[in-house]
Length: 247
Image (cartoon, rainbow, N blue to C red; front, side):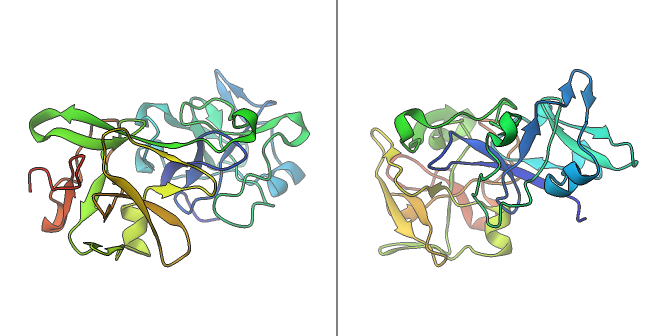
């Protein structure tokens, strides 16, 4: 099994914010495991249905939207190193066939998608899809910039266009720079921000600010990180109107 090198956050119609691997596959925790100390009790047929998420080391996992301090590992009985989040061993679900699916949520009353804090994901209130929330925060020398609801910096890409809105970051680019997506049925909450959406080539909806598609950066580890600022001379944080900040 290939080793996992990245985790990030996503949203769905069924549950609140949850954690995925770098390919967008939901990650789960198992009530019969323990977090203190980390220990896995899923092996054999269980591990076939719920494949453990394997990593080379905690330091090798790039966490976007999840506090890096929550990322750890536990050694399985077969010697493999399994990812943990807040101490809980992490798994995928074999019946999740595509990115964003959470078919394993609540299975057997013991399997739950991870929240970004490492807790059990809950159903969205009244069946509503959780909104995608943007905010403006003052961050260091950059001043007031746009972030997601977790305080993670959002960026614009000079090779995109704002009039009309269009994204030119796909494939490996979109792994390094995950687009901020809007789940079906969700609203975008962004008071005082020139927000909109654009349809990507894969049919998903991406948030725009001032017409510019916006992205997270896989190199940002915690809220208010700005490691993506100025990368390649084409990536920049932006203000509430969509203008470059510090560019």
